[in-house]
Image (tube, rainbow, N blue to C red; front, top):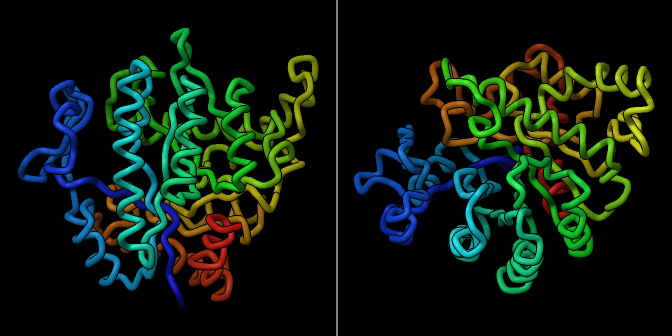
Amino acid sequence: MKKINGHGHLLPYPKDIPQFMQDQKHFWVSEDGKFMCQGDWTRPITDESFFLNEKLAWMDKHEIAHEVVLTLSQLYCNGLNEQTCYDIIRFQNDFNAKVQAEHSDRFTTGFVVQPAYIDQSLKEIERCVAQHQLKLLCLSTHFLNQDGEWVSVADDSVAPIFELADQYQLAIEIHPYDADKLVNMKNTFWRHHLVWMMAQTADTYMMYVFNGLAQKYPNIRTCFAHGAMLAQANHARVIQGLEGRPDLFPGAHHPNEVLGHKNIYFDTLVHDPYTLQLMINRHGSNQILCGIDDPYPLGEMETVPGWYPGKLLDEAVDKEIISQKQRSDIWCDNVLRWIGG
């Protein structure tokens, strides 16, 4: 069984991060490689496979033939001025492009844009496709617009980005971040990651569906991170709202229109085989792709007691939720269909 991980992350080595990013406290990695830093925030680097050479060794250990590397959430650049945003995003995209160019047999890498600056975003999409042959656009679920409002990336104002992505037939990844800035609560018990980032994805999935993006842009293939797990549970409530107060939903598409849609995908990082079962019941196993979210401790990492990459799918087979063939497809063919069409 060939294994392709559809959701992974990679840090630059400390020496590879531009000095201005540390000087201005945007993002850096400590010289000893033990912490990633942003402003006054630090986060421990919990596994050596955050870095390239160590990542390759980790993939070999777990027999993962290929990995899709998403952009770093810390570099979405929400709230930064246009020039700083340009400098940081260009660094991130060039870093990922180099990884893919030098290890094309092992990695497919994404690139990112900041929708607050539409013209800049469109030029960066053109550059990344033409210069780097990148084919995966990574978007944050929400961004801070120039009026200081938090906006879903599925908002009508972002249409030019989706139009160009459709023209280039790109794969898209929608991933949450900055929940702490949207939600005015202390991050007690890591609640921003455990609840509110999941709510961000559910919100943008709902907006994506209501605004009919799957129908408007038939050439893009969009994957929602972490299985859009709260969106799965919230499906019936959204329909109840639509049908109970249709006056609040002018022009909205019905959520049932996209169940099992061939261009909407979800990764498997939901931690629980019964949540996976709900996803499959709603959308079919063909729309599910393997996502480890390595090397973060919320991913399927052996640094967490009892876990290893692919454990959820193995449990789902053992509980007869999926077949051996479905597991093989989720690990490989479904990922290939998403990133390659």
